[in-house]
Amino acid sequence: MIIVPERAIPDLLTRDASYRAVENVFAAMASGDAYNFPVIREAIGHEDALYGFKGGFDRVGGSLGLKAGGYWPHNLDKHGIINHQSTVFLFDPDTGMVRAMVGGNYSTALRTAAASSVSINHLARKDARVMGMVGAGHQASFQLRAALEQRPFEKVIGWNYHPEMLSNLEEVAAEAGLPFEAVDLDGLAEADVIITITSSFAPILLEHHVSPGTHIACMGTDTKGKQEASADLVARATLFTDEVAQSISIGECQHAIAAGLITEAGISQIGAVINGSHPGRRSADDITLFDGTGVGLQDLAVSAALVDLAVEKGVAIEVDL
Ligand code: NAD
Image 1 (cartoon, protein in one colour):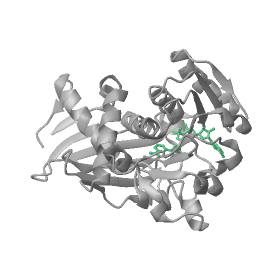
Image 2 (cartoon, protein in one colour; image 1 turned 90 degrees about the vertical axis):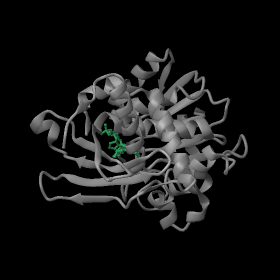
Image 3 (cartoon, protein in one colour; image 1 turned 45 degrees about the vertical axis):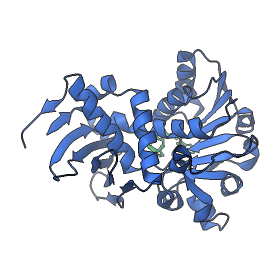
């Protein structure tokens, strides 16, 4: 078995490798070559932790396995380690033997950023120039850095519930040599692309905040009850997601579905656009919305790429099990 330790991963995993792994697995999901297993998520009644498993099988990419982990809210205060903790286990699909154990913390941020990037690449207008951000926490920096590679953006604008965190976005914009402007929610109408990445449980982005032609990637809503975009806005947009079952139950579309404003049939897999079986954006005025709920196959795809990179660079640890 190969072990790729968490500490080795930031030097191994590139945004480019993450993008390719996620784009390929989204395509495989849409063509029926890959599927996710039902998600298990449990409040374990210890340390207020939420623990669970996300798994799947990609017949084309050859990835079989699961990500185990969750959220321990007291980690930082008590132990000085991050609250989100996860590890990916990969198995040989031909024999069932365990193939690899890969740290899942850093790669979760890169695979999540890759998902919104894939959506921007395939759904945003080619002439998109203003990048808008809602959210400025840990994931937001990764999201913004990856998004800026998808179009020749000229400016970044952002809003956050905690305005003091906006400097995180300003730093990433500066890295890319772009100006950053803090805006109120109405100011987001200037954006051609908007990423939402918050832990909000109430709508932030409303219909009148978004101009025709905008592409929105809603990335923060991954649990029942969370919400970033109003149900009206969701109903107005052409809808795409990683996985429809998750979109309507734990993703951004859950609220518009519950309100009867949209149906499951109105949500398309982003993989269908990648495969060319869905045209994607139909006009320059379309509002497209990608509901990125986060699937286990993304973790497996990125981790499989990491195993190859670790072997190639000589940092993989091999053990007999
Ligand atoms: P974080 O704690 O670092 O940042 C939280 C963000 O939410 C900050 O911008 C904060 O200001 C904002 N926020 C907090 N309370 C708010 C409120 N009441 N209203 C509006 N905004 C509020 O978290 P993070 O690691 O950046 O994660 C952000 C979100 O992304 C979380 O909800 C997390 O579960 C989700 N996430 C999704 C995926 C996926 O695949 N879709 C993957 C990882 C994380």
